[in-house]
Length: 154
Image (cartoon, rainbow, N blue to C red; front, side):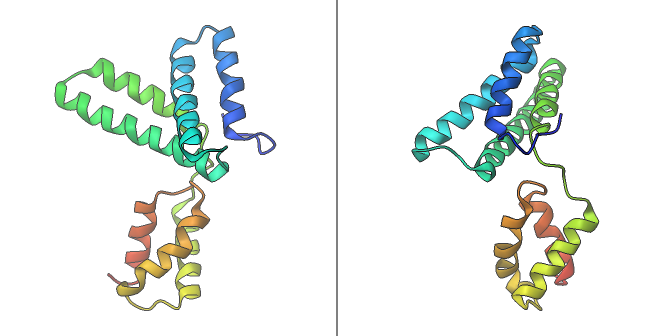
């Protein structure tokens, strides 16, 4: 499922919870309720509604939490928990913007390097400061960091 631009992620999740309830899709309903509660918790802490970037950040954090659960379940030999967490990740990933291709990420990294005038790995921080806000959840900071390191010859 891709997000419609006219609707923010939170509204989309709220609507999808209702659809999941009507369809009696328990795993989807449970996953989306957890995501919505995580969003509301961050909004309460922040004291107001989140912008699109903030909502994407919460969804990414929820996905990361599932990845950690999978690692724990693998160590415990619990294939049932692994499958459940993977299914939840698939549901949550549907609310993120389309990922950047490696070529797109490299092009954006090159632009940020040129803009920062960076020529050495020591200037990586300046490049990342420009690049990360432009990614808008379409690539992880880790992926961006690897590309920038490669381009700066680190």
